[in-house]
Image (cartoon, rainbow, N blue to C red; front, side):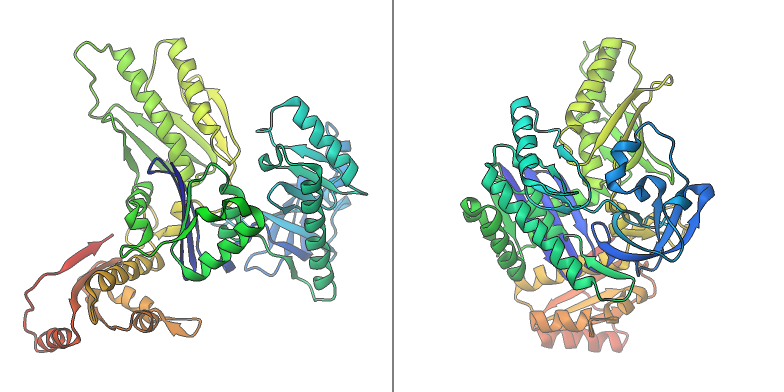
Length: 517
């Protein structure tokens, strides 16, 4: 049983993939305006640094984008330059000139967004390369006859400097379907260029696809049993995409109308909380500890409470723990969207056969990952090295912010994420209890966040209008910055009585729920 859940809120989209009820993949996007990957710009070169073989371009963002020499070489010349010494970037890029570039990596911390001159327009079966005369085929398509067929098909359909990448979904597709999609992607690109031609630099030529579009296009397929959406307008949008991409599978789409929030109903919220923790417990009683640094991610494996049976030898105990940890590490890398260098300190094993078995298990689990991951093997210290392509923010970067109390050594949930959680709790309480009023005690910082206007309307006002309730926010100085208590849900009359007692410094005694993160 495979399910895809789409939860859509204001400035937040979340996609969860469940296999047999267990969360296997998670994608989060906070605010379309913050996402740059995939965007194509007509940009202006503002600085060239020959010593670093790099240039910086104004794309209209807060920071100028960064382009390395490899990304500055014209796409049509890259194949001819393999094995040759790289030219000086000054011979390719000059200050003040216009360049057509695409964002390939989001800005991370102090690092600027990275751009390339190789433009790509993704579709369901193809990625169209307007100026790269090359043909590439997904490594997941392994049959030699099928790879040759696709190559020959592309050779017949492409013209001039065009290129194409065949995605996994292209396997078995007939030439007419491939031609139709190629024609569509050509028209998308030509129309985007024409629309941006007369505009002043820097200008966005073509926006990258948002998370929901990517999820329907890339994650949904015939092996998905259910696609569940919790938001009416998003449901209609997804329905139209399915009718275009997968008309035979459109009946697998449904609109969630349960009382509990979608992610809470399917226990995804609890898994998200676990994916933000440093320590992850394994079913056997062992654990893995995940630490992030500026340069890399370090993962430590421990036997923890797992001692095995009385007859179990130490080597067997260690091997079992390591194999279980390898499966969970691959899953956590996907859920947390961790990229860059990863170092794993598995428990030492003496047997070379067990070491080989562990690496094979890790590689097998990582092969299920859509993001390119490479296992580099064991170091002399017995550490496993791997790299995972980093494109977007990790889950931690998307949902947390540096802790103000410890000076950035740790991380706490951002005010925006705590506000979203409080709003979901209020909506669930109102749905299940048919409340007329809600009284919430919260920190002053969180209260101010709820009163800040977004698109002209404060969150508190929007929630009141949407749910037709009276919402009372009571700032409490003694609460931590990211904490709140739902003091009361029920009738307006009883809420007013509570507030009158509070104003008279009387102590209210009654049921309350507490949520602190």
